[in-house]
Image (cartoon, rainbow, N blue to C red):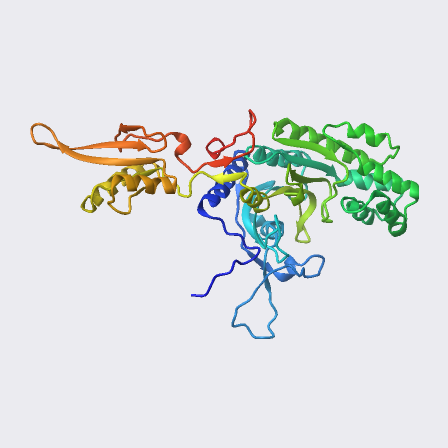
Length: 465
């Protein structure tokens, strides 16, 4: 057989690494469900025209086509590159069966044909949480959705996260109050501050947007405001710009910052960063970018915001607010760097030892009794010496080995005794397969994290289940 070469951009995790991903997904799902969000899963393909942005087909879309299709046949389907586009279609298609406001979370793979690099893959998993209304959606849902994601991510054993919030109404109202006509283009130019020096951005505002040098300077001053409380309100007011939309944006941003700080704890930072704008044009209010401490090179590992026209059928408009977390984008670099690891590659808590091959039925019955009480286990593959069976369990990370011993009493009556050995400590005790239970921490594979835990943040998965 010829050598198999890795396929770039399509990561595959080893079993212990996959256990990390599964525990993180389980933790996120649990938090979302605690807040009353229903889980959905959408199809992986959408019509090409629905995936197109502004009428143009993105060159990074993977198309789906039969290998036996006619040579000149035009591809009609593509793999979704995020979870927002299929969610918008889902809302339109199933609106008659949904109760609004509709609260959903979705954790699925997506595909994007870009150049693979750290944190950017051609196949990746995202976790999205959204609330969508019919024709209207009160602002308090912005605070709720953002707080839910803060709560969910604060419970993960990953490096500290920073939620950086802004509000498009604040930006647009400020620019409008300055007298800038092309607000959208001004936002695009200011968004270049991460890549270009401030004086070059100011020059672009004058040359491309048509601002005066004074207006450009005030735009830059707004973009430099970054605080971890609501003091940004006074700082913006001090710039001397007034506009009704600006007032609304300031009020909304203050509410989001205060609401998220109330649930953030020590492992998540919450800031108002008035440079954040988000590149997508459909955001209309709250916007957020999420960054991971020590991994700023990945840029944002999550983001989202308010969109007042997620979908529309021409009669009804469905406004929404949501935020997405890049599961693969965050976890794969952490796993590669040894920050996160799984403590065992198998779910088995117990290996049932085998005395002899003819005793396999007895060992299998013991395993069945343990599984009936939700204790994952397996039977030894061969009747090797017990030392070899114990080493087999060690290699697989299985913490307990179960032994069955047959004997008889003084009257000649045959008896069977059971013992279970914790191979980590060497402790071996009598046990009954109908009642014995391992420590709760051993019931599932655990996440081993080098992140220093705080009083409110777990470092292993048994604490986040």
